[in-house]
Structures are given as structure tokens and as C-alpha cells.
Length: 240
Ligand SMILES: [Mg+2]
Image (cartoon, rainbow, N blue to C red; front, side):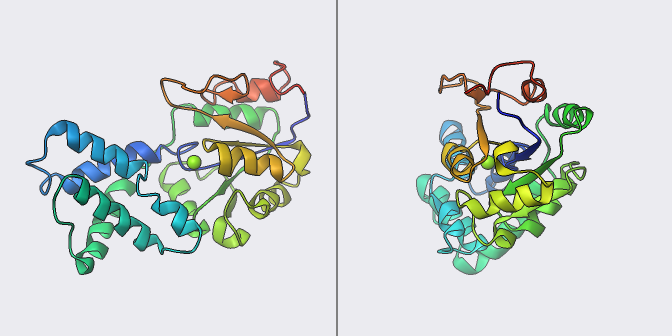
């Protein structure tokens, strides 16, 4: 097993259950406008919004859209999918602000996160977060989610590029004080997180929290419950 001296986590849908908050927040914001939309379609569209069926977030990361711009794209797509006219451009800022207020109250860590961090603390393994969003926004998200204990944080703005670029991964390693090869990255995106980490010289593990676990592989974690045990050497999971 390759030695792990530090762990870096993705935030969205790895530590913080952003997807559930997005579905709930979206349903809350559209309750009135979508009151005549059949329940199954509403559910489909809320999922599509949360999963970013518009592909707008990647365009935000690529600098093609602003944060508000990507949200506007997703709102427009959702209204389009249910056959309703989207709020006019000048109303989208207010829509987004109300949505933001709703979801921020719903941000919460997955139930296995604190136990995992406790176990890493017990092993004296330092940890941090490397995320594809503005660092200040993500710092606030960690605080509001009750994850203020995570001191090391790198955002795509402060790193100078989003994952899978190696810069954010290397910035995280520098802050942890660990060599990339001895640092494990854990995230839910196979490309931005796992492949990006490996290309940057880190170790990488995919976290697949989906209940159906479509991807079968020994190198995929289904939750964070076993992470510290794996790092502690109680498993040959990372052997190669
Ligand atoms: Mg993620």
C-alpha cells in the first residue's frame, strides 16, 4: 500500500450534500410556478437542475459564464423542460438570491464525514479540501455546514485554475505539507477529481455515494466509513 500522509477532499457531493440541498431548494423556489406541473416531471426537472443537465457549471469553471450566469442557464433550462416561460433576465438575480438563501440553510455534511475526520485526527493525518469554486464561497459553505474544522482549503480562484488542472492539487499538498505522492485525494468526479489527482502525482479514490453503485470496482469507496482504516493500513485496498 502506498503510504498516505495527508488527505485532500472534494467538497460538493463528497463532504457536503449539495445535490440534496439543490433539489430541495429548487422545489421550494419553483413550488408556485410549477404547481400545475405533474409530480413526476417536477421531480425529473429538479434532479436535472441539481445534476446540472445544462452543463453550465463546467462552462462557469472554463470562464465562459459567471456564477450567476451558470445559474441562470440552469433555471432557463428547467422552465423550458416543463414548458413554461422562464423568469425574465432582470428577475433571475433575485431568483438566485432567494435560492441561495434557501440552499445555504440546507447545506449539511454527509453523516459519515465527522467520524472520518475524527479517525484521521486519531491517526494524526492532516486533511483539507480542494474545490472547484471560489474559495471564499466554499469557506462559508464549510462553516455553514458545521465543517469549520477543515482549515486547509483551496479554491479554483486562488489556485489559478480548476481541477483537473494540477495546480489546485499541488496547492493543497503545499498547505498540508505533504508530498503529492503521499497525498490521497477523495472525490465524486472520476475526471476532475480522480484522474486529475493522479495526473498531478497524487493518489486518487472515487467516492460513489449513489445507492445503486453502478460502477463496480475495488478502487471505489461507497462512503467515507472505511477511509481511515484503509489509510491506517488495515486493508490492501490501495496496493499497487
Ligand atoms: Mg464533487
